[in-house]
Image (cartoon, rainbow, N blue to C red; front, side, top):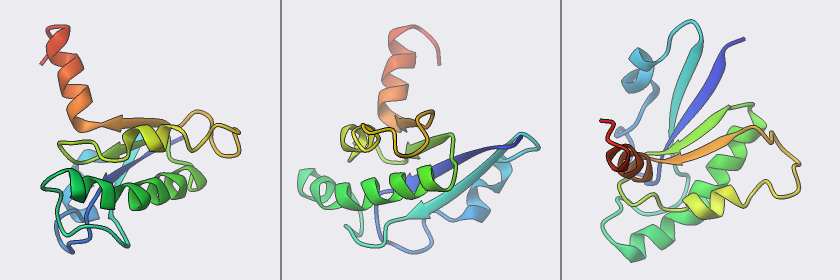
Length: 116
């Protein structure tokens, strides 16, 4: 069975993250799709923009869960909404196996354990 991964760009600017940009990441076992937010900041430049992005990120994570995604990746250096997204499935209503990742936290972890 093909696993689905959702790449979430926490902004509303059209054309920055589209499925054709992530098509090369998909293969016979993994399907990667990309979405932007319906409402939120045009870009994430600081704490205020991060705060504006969180509701949209959480909505996109819930949408990914409902569509059967195995993982949701927040495509932003500040990982806005990561902790809030992890709290969305406390009642196990959706797919309890979905994983949430932020790009920067993953990089920090890899650097800490010596893997690049």
